[in-house]
Length: 268
Image 1 (tube, rainbow, N blue to C red):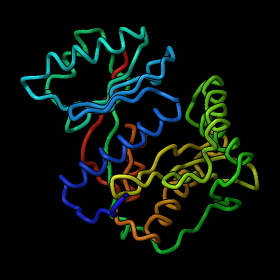
Image 2 (image 1 turned 30 degrees about the horizontal axis):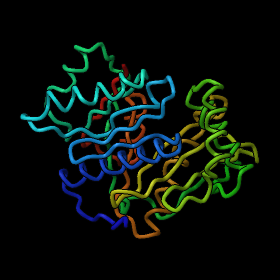
Image 3 (image 1 turned 60 degrees about the vertical axis):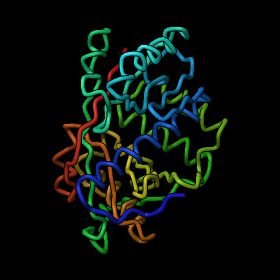
Image 4 (image 1 turned 90 degrees about the horizontal axis):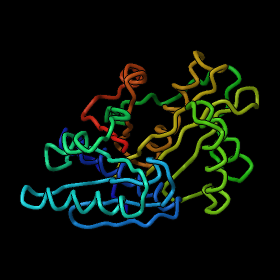
């Protein structure tokens, strides 16, 4: 059950941003047909694929008494399977020196993302789309294939990622999932932009905002961000969240998002 969150205090927003991102990672793990291991202290997944982003630690909250043994056990899980893996560092990650443990083991910081949130009541009541742009919710396999291609190209992913995502959608039929909605931007009826909403943690999390290079600087990214959040607000959601790159941070600030926390992703 995804009870809608209404608490706008910083602590509550940080918890909601984390919860939404953790659920996004769990969904990714399930789509990869991974083994998912969840205990009171950690959540991790192992797909067996030889790529760091396809195996990882989503959540870790070890006490000072169990930290050394707990982390060692997690490292051993992946070493026994001979797969590289990622480790997501969130505001609530414990112990406080996890990142130093990872660096000591040869892990590299892959990216830093900025946890942001917005009060959806601050969104405009109407949205003027750029000329020629139409936004549709994905509801069939053909449109979803276009969504995957545009998202991958717009995000700079290699062709192998497109093939992988198409294989996943063929197995799991990603369109029309109850808590996930895909949006495709069509410019003069040609697919050029994507975004995705995930309803989890009581909030509407925004992901996969991407625009093809030739269609940028026309306000399309702004529209692909604002439109889904307006839909969420119309369905009584109060809070929108996302994780921004340094490049996208100022764009989201101009839309009304505020920074609340940071996430680090390490790769082995």
